Length: 260
Image (cartoon, rainbow, N blue to C red; front, side, top):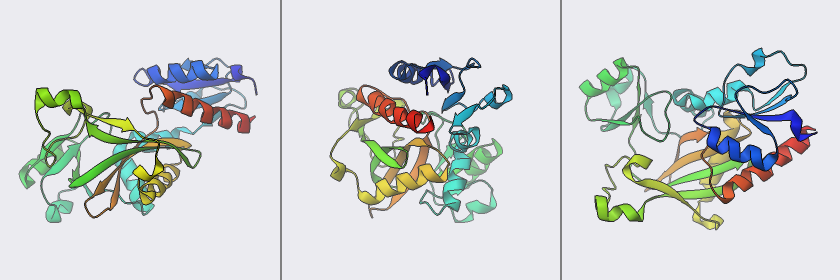
């Protein structure tokens, strides 16, 4: 199928990576595809493109799947119902009876961990619920991975670390209580050796992407001191850099060929 029939639908936030993928694939990208673009790759985009009446238009994946992982509370509910390991989460005051503090307060829609608020007691927790947030248990973990899954197979992996250049500025990170997000100096480094990522974590990542109805996803997963895995979230439009853009582009080409 000609590339001029394909289009990557993206938001302003996800457009930098969408632009790179579109360039690699030789397709268009943005929010408003021409009528000739009958095959739409949703790069984190849940807009109502179905409302544009175009005969035989197809979406990869459909809007519901993107919505499933864009709303992080919905993600937890779906993964829980699919018997996939996730941290405990709380949405009502009654559920807090057995909660252990601290907890993380989160918005249903968030990116890069910028929304996280630490909650230290019941009074704070109730206030966060009233603010329309949900709460997640804090798990003492030793490793965090991001596992990229496309079409039911793992194509790339990375591990979270504290960026070395920040050690002199911020000092040694407090491993137990620091929120490990970009803002606090944490990022991912890539590795090629499959043995660096436990086999059960990889299987759990594949299951999570499938449960959400996605064709691809970047799965954030932590592993505690007892070697138990917990899925934190699945990203339908992860930021990609360097060689990983090529990895995604090559896998998307397979999707395009299969769809022809």
